[in-house]
Structures are given as structure tokens and as C-alpha cells.
Image (cartoon, helix red, strand yellow):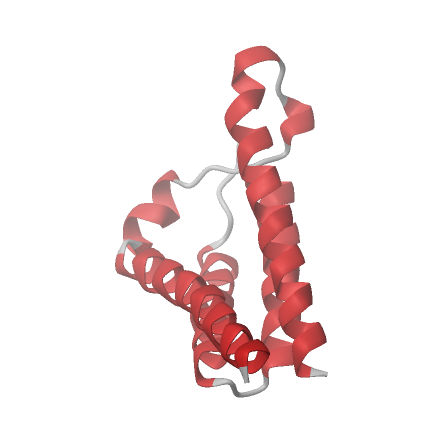
Amino acid sequence: MIAETLMLVGRLVFGGFFLIAGIRNFTHFSERRTTATTNYGWLLPAPVMAAGFAVQFFGGLLLVLGIWTVPAAAALIVFLVLATALYHNLFLFQGAERDPHLYFTLVNITLAGGLLMVIAGAL
């Protein structure tokens, strides 16, 4: 009973994190389209950016609802890998400029690890 409750709370926390991020990104979509430059100096095409935000929103919602948790968590892991490569590639920076990218890379790795635990709990 305790393990199931903890898994439920953990899934709600993970899902809520991505759901809120997706809502915030869609709310500020017009701003993000023109200001969210990748580490490589180019903007993502709007449909690609919208697809990423949709993965955040719907992946988070599915985790919160407990529906299709394995595909949702897997899609969120793919999103994290791509977002890290595009926006937090720490190998492109040196010194103090690298610090925030290292931090966000570690955060995204940790989130992916937690999502792997969500997948394990659902299997």
C-alpha cells in the first residue's frame, strides 16, 4: 500500500512538472518562437517547437491521469534528450558560461532517470 501510494505521488509530481511546463510554454509561444535560440544560434521552426511543447503538455497530462504512462514517459525522455542537445549542450561552452548548461544537463538527466523509474513501476 505504501509503495503504491509513493509511486502515485511520484508520477503526479513528474506529470505535474511537465504539464505546467507545457502550459507555460504554450502560453508564451509567440515569445518563445522569436527568442528561444538554440546553442547553435538558430531558432527551431515553430511547428517543431509546438510539437515539443505538446509532448511536454500531453506527456505530463497522461502521467497525471495514469494513462499510457510508459509511452508518455518514453516520449518525455526523448524530449529531454533533444532539449538538452539543443539548448544545454555544455560542450559548446567553457568556464562560467558552462555552469548553467551543466546544471540544466544534470537536471534533465535526473528527470530522465525518474521517468525511467516511472516506466519500471508501470511494467
